[in-house]
Length: 141
Image (cartoon, rainbow, N blue to C red; front, side, top):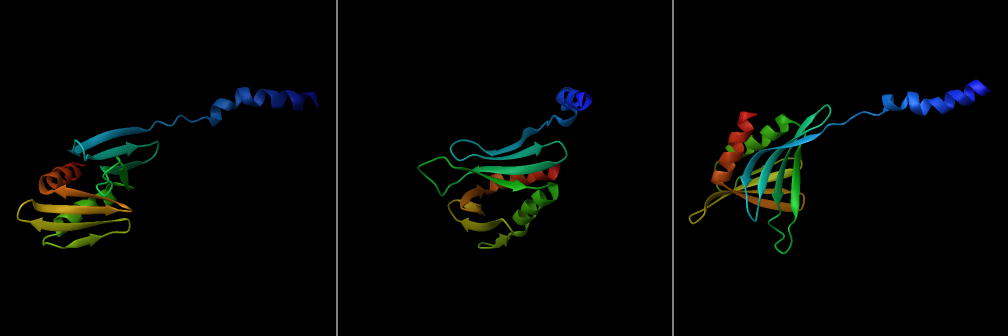
């Protein structure tokens, strides 16, 4: 009986460090696509065993508050789908629909070519120079 009692007292000291695992996660900004009042950035999030990518943007549908949305990509393959959407949209009004988000291309004489990204309730607009920055960053990965 004394052995069982002593054994249970020493378990937290002996085995405690074996159960604790240090999780090192890091976030790295790959590209600041747009800065200022309506920022867009592409980040790489690395965890213990996996790496994911996120596109952070301010929701342009909410004017009175700053609402930041995060579009997650599980891996590089999913991020490349976004790159392919930008390259496949050739004509005004073309839409690329995915499971969680959609991209629509519009062209006007004054503003040129722009792309509207919709994710859940949020939306943001990319101008052509911003798309070029984003696509160049994705291709380097």
